[in-house]
Length: 426
RNA sequence: GGACAGAUGGCCGAGUGGUCGAAGGCACCUGACUCGAAAUCAGGCAUACCGGCAACGGUAUCGUAGGUUCGAAUCCUACUCUGUCCGCCA
Image 1 (cartoon, rainbow, N blue to C red):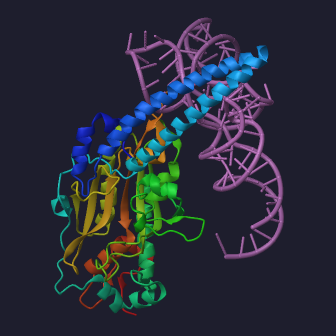
Image 2 (image 1 turned 90 degrees about the vertical axis):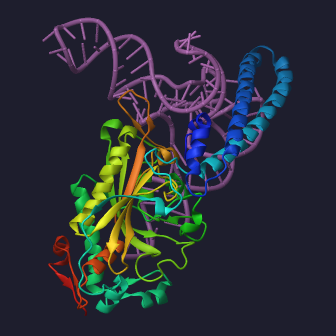
């Protein structure tokens, strides 16, 4: 959520920058409501002050003059009900304003390129090179099925489309990847959290998934409404909901492994084959809580922490800076990590690292005290995938495949697989 | 699922319908004392919004939402959450 006062103060500039995003919205109503609210607010406060003063008199009359008390009581009753009416209108206005504010996206950082589509994203750097395969590389699902370790048909029977069973060594590889990533991040100063996979509406609103993107989420049936997390970002960011952190304890860095659940509404027909786009997948997430002045540097560092996993796995990839049109709702700036998939002959997103400014902190009420005795203020949040485990598995299957259908296991993962050096057909 | 208990400031914890933005304590800040520190003493110390250069003044906030009342932290109702015990279960 944006700061209402900032929006009111720099209205033109904010509107202009929001126009650069896709599907920008009209903010004139916000401006009008803000002005109206201010007038009404002053009015209500004045009336309340009068009532409070009158009540002081009542206190005295109660002792000295019971008769005058009775007549004054009638008058004050009218005053009180008048105030209540105005208060109700004010509440209504505020709710309307709040509702509008909740669906306004974050303002892109000045360093974010303006663009009209993902074609305007900028490649910032590239690591490694495309593997030199002396045969026509297969796509990961062909590799997996040939190995007899990937079963979409049975998954469809059990759960429908966009689910998969992994079998044997491939299932173990998925677990190994997650453990490897977590171990690496813990070594780099991230604290591991194992979060709840079901969260409240409030938590989903705190990080920005709601109210605007409810159709993307799975939620529980029945009167006990809970949402399946689309990413560990939601529980981990809300870990500090409504808290004031001591400045000396910043930055706080967490990593978390979790399954992620996504309805994938509106992506019908996209990536229908394979493991790229699933209703359920595993991800290791990095989340940071930092001082505002440190968030830009923290984004660079967090992105590097995520990219480092790809480097250790020897996977060729590039880092792109998303343009204004391609950024997520809550983000001020986002780097995507795109891994090379020889089977697809394409770079595919495997991590998305964002800085949110105080946008999430304002929604989730996360503050810090800069120094003892100083006033609490909103901190900045960041997060990024480190990495999407399923897509990493895809990248390994495609990049490490051999002509005979076996798949080499990257050195760094072998200790997690009992020394296994390759996947071989069963 | 059943039975109780509770929800107050950064933390702990008092609170009779008006004298309560809220005692007291802890933590923290300033000053005094001290060579310095500890201890002690004095003062300060919630958040948000509005007005003001400022001092300061006003308004709201005691889990959430309603209600009663001239007036609610205090009374009533519902809800949420937490704790304890019992049952059930991985």
